Length: 251
View (cartoon, rainbow, N blue to C red):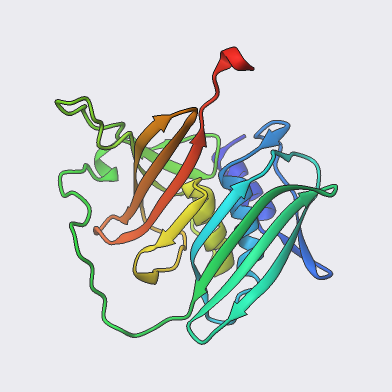
């Protein structure tokens, strides 16, 4: 498949379709027979975003993978409206296939406000090479990437950044906040996302810098924390995820 093929299939299959009182989603076959990760989160996010009050944008979400999503089997999404307030709205989602639950998510939506922005702390490190200075790669997904790799280990062996990359959608984005929210969740590939300063979790037309740190691995579990910035240094989102580390000898 070409990059254009991946882009076309993503824009076609990622949005969940409204059906009766819920949503239905289909999956591509390029992940193999089962899939976790960004595509699942993105499709579920599209269902959640379609239920938000007018003008509200998703600013945080948390998801749980309960089992693998199976390719070729329609996914049913049920969204419950937990609360609609003047500034925030909250939704809960359950995703099932043939009656078996595979994902659960909760999300918060915020309405725009006109208060001035304030951000404490440093923005993007000015020494980070910009994407125009790096080799741009297109892989088996709809995103372009420019990879920097991890930072050098410090004296005590600590690695401050275990993965760094610039990323953007490979083709011009439609002006649709539901699609952009779904693509942001897909791109982040993380189950816990918070927009900084209630900034909406929306995929940008510009490059985004993704800086991921593995903070701990113990007892078969790990914890990842990431920061996402725009090219001008604006801190867009913080993302985290607990990971499961399989011991092959126990399988």
